[in-house]
Image (tube, rainbow, N blue to C red; front, side, top):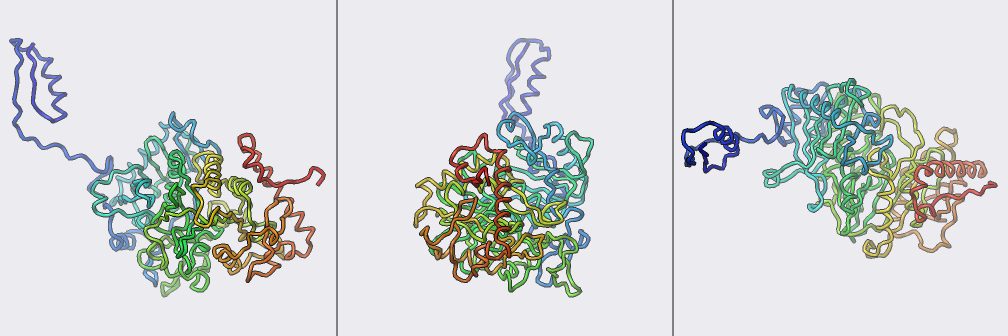
Length: 580
């Protein structure tokens, strides 16, 4: 049998040769054929299984505005030039519909619990197929290629595929837009398929409602069905970073960050509604970011290219920087406009969870690029204590800091999740419970290393860690006497922390019962009856009982981690005598 050889670089010729060489030939000599034909290779599809004829790739904001106004019902232009959109039935995240693929890659890594609910790879494939088929059936497909992370050494290339211009604008603002040179060679590390207008299929194993948010760390994909709430995409990226970066020794944080003119850095931890965006956005300091950061051996960088601020009761007087950011290029969610197209921020008839997504450059005093080559001077844990037990500000030692970081005590605010209709006290591990991919102790150990490492000290020395309560004083949220701590006092406390006004001498603090952390005796500009909870309550014993009640809740909650927690963490736990 003769053997045919072809001098060619065309891959498909290898298949042809196998077929040719199986045919009978009259002599046994090798026949050499010089391939000289010019043949056009099929152009590889840049966007995989998507219908490329329908794709609008990294479209400019004016075009996306035009499409949203023309093709998406109830979309309007506001008096300041921002785009107002509705997210449909879902106006908050749907955490119970989130699924994570369980396979050999994730079985021993992911923190499998009520946050990370497993789904089989085959089921994910069915969900993915349903989403892509729907996306290809629509008239327009918006593809947004951008970066997550301002540090070039650690950023992730993200592709977002959506069918609403509103979603494309949202992710254009919340991610970091690449340059034309960067875009030319852009190959995504992670892809989000947002088919939100299309319902999920409950006949697929593991899908229990018409909404499905599935993430696959092996194929590096996320699929959204049955919800048009844009926040699912944003938090999907945060969850991705929570999975990837600890494996590189980096600490991802659900936090905001700002820096002063001398390079002093403050991190703010807290769940939605506790004040991260509000308290980190102030005229005297540059904003690095309002929600997602990473602490590296060199410093801190922002994951996002924009901010996602709550808009309920927003005003120029209370939050001028955020108010001014709501302009052309921004996208408002679920707000109500008057006849003059002015936003009525007090009207929460659609949802309490009204929001605005805007790029960082809309903030007057912003740090760009959004990274600092300094370690934090102060860390502030924000909590919204609905029980009125915790003081407005406390200083924590390193053990208490790690314990409270793992505990993540706060109150879920109305509207931030489906089904939350009143303030509900809860514990959210690492102030990021819904977004953790790994065990909370993984992040706690990384934070402990940061707080105790000489390599992570700032120019002024070690990091000071504070617990700031933006919740209630004088009583619980359900009592007639309880009141929300006025924002001006929370701002004054944060300002005092940042300026180094609060003494470092223990003589200037009082020991807080059961918890053992230190409460400053005085903060200039804050009344003592605000600073010290027991003075704001009519009955100090009733307040002490409330403190003990909350302390017991901490201890009970921590039982789920106790077996794996080390002494460095357990030393920070509240202490209640057996006879008490």
